[in-house]
Amino acid sequence: MELRFVSQLPKSFFDELNSLFFFNPNQALYAVEIIHSIETFGTPKIIVEGDNLRLVIGDGNNVQALFGLLNRGNEITLCGVIAYTRTRTEIIDLIHVALKEEYSLFGAQGNLRLLIIMMAEMKKIARKIRGVRAIYVTYAHREITI
Image (cartoon, rainbow, N blue to C red; front, side, top):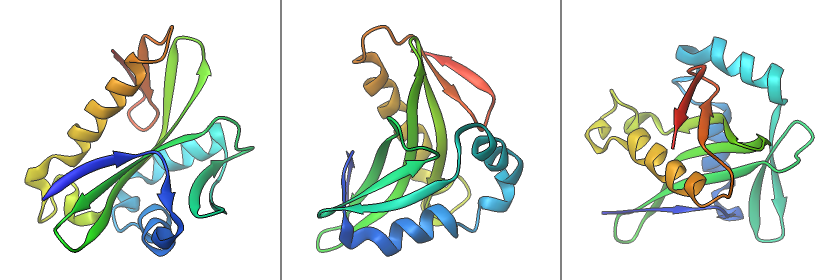
């Protein structure tokens, strides 16, 4: 089993991304945070661009995505996505997070600690961006120093 992260997702994952992002069984647990994020940044949409999918939030300016793909031999599964942007010079705003239910902390594959791994990957990305010193996690109302 291999976990990898990509910034572009092939359009063949449209149904998985749609289900993960908009029909996630865990959404109810974070309804207040999701509503706050939508009020702050705008409504998310999935756009097909050529052979790939793109997340657009609000006006779509500078929204990036980190997709977690799990390779289980002959099957590749979309297991998580983080949408983020840089609205301030020193801070990356983590706008939305969605994990497939089985990979959430209390899911059948929770022992993989996918959220922790994805946050570590976000830190790596943020460290490569000149001037960025922190990630603001909208759902937690908390800043993480990188």
